[in-house]
Image 1 (tube, rainbow, N blue to C red):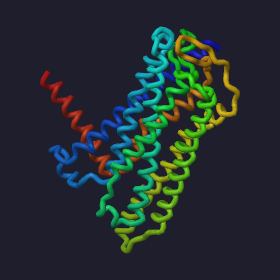
Image 2: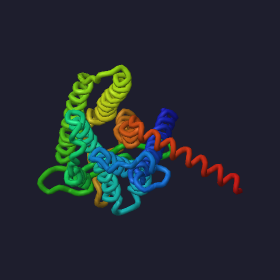
Image 3: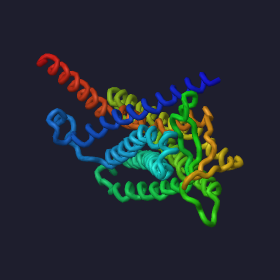
Image 4: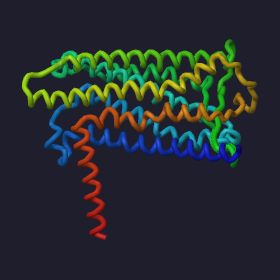
Amino acid sequence: MNQFVTLRDIVLLSLYALTSILSLIGNAFVFRISLRRHNHMWFQSTTNFPFTTSCIFLLNLAIADTLLGLTIPVEFVFCSKYFVQNITASSYVCAGNKSMQTLAYNVSTLTICLIAYDRYRLIENPLEKYYPKKPFPVILLTWIFSGLFAATCFVSTKVNIYFNSYEKLICSQILYPLRMKYFSNDTIYKIRSLCLILLFYIIPLLIITSLCLLTIRIISRRTVIGVREFQTFKQSRTRSISLLMITIIVFTLSHSPIHFIYLRDIFHSSSKVSLGRSIQITKCQDSTMYLLFYWLSISGCCYNSIIYSWFNRKYQNLVYKCCRLIVCCERCNACSN
């Protein structure tokens, strides 16, 4: 049994680390392509168009996913058993990193809703692209709203504790850094979990599904005149519908399991709380289901950039050019040496 737990933990830690690396690499491509496409000499021939609302939303999604990817390795250090047991302010530091992770996760979810609405708006009325909106107030609102919710992590939050022993490398437990005067921390945790499920899962899922289905409905009913134009349009329509369907399926599969765990925690009786220094903690749980579903929920930070950018041919061409440029630079360095 101990060997299974150790093997499971090694696999999970590898998945977390791989997710962080892929997130940083994938979103770095988005930043490079989006921010340097106007003045970079290698991209001048294909990128003479201004930033659109969709591009700004994609950049915001990349920022949130990059922040989420950065919090994963930081969590390995500040939420390790040694740090929690030996550092006085460990609960606040660990909860602070968790709040940043929650902030990035929620901003990413809300930005996906904004992207779904923006695509529906442009598909319904193509002339809207010539009248650009001002997305920055909406983006700022998503960060403020997500930040206010993430601040509740300092009251109670469920975190992963790493490197507990040689047999158990990872487990999960609930931290209560602050002691509430009028409400129990367990009550606050349950209220927080319920709000998380409602505000950042159920409502976004309904919005994304509805907008994507409406967009698919509009695209499927459109047609063009001419055989050659119809073949091109048919390929573009199939690609767009595939992207929208993948968006719905991936969001549902990646977010649903962990929120069912949170829903179970709401109705499950809380574990006994132990007191130590200024920190309240529950018993460390090593549920394989929770640890796997938790990884699945944060893994979106590494494939969101692929889903929303890779299906765009302009992004594909630019990524290929970046890769060829990197290969050429490596060959030049090898020849010079």
